Image (tube, rainbow, N blue to C red; front, side):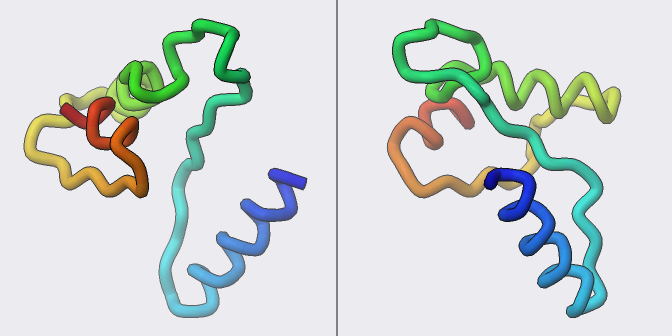
Length: 72
């Protein structure tokens, strides 16, 4: 199901001339205590590592307070 959602999102962006290079997501549940589940910043660290950069000054958008906490 998640793959189908990602395919639909990529198709929509592609139809407008855009490109999604990567999609990062956490496959864990709330009780798994992983580093990639927000508000922990593990996914953001994965992005920085993948692109060999820091995320300082990069805009961050979320739809919950946990997202804001991860960005901070």
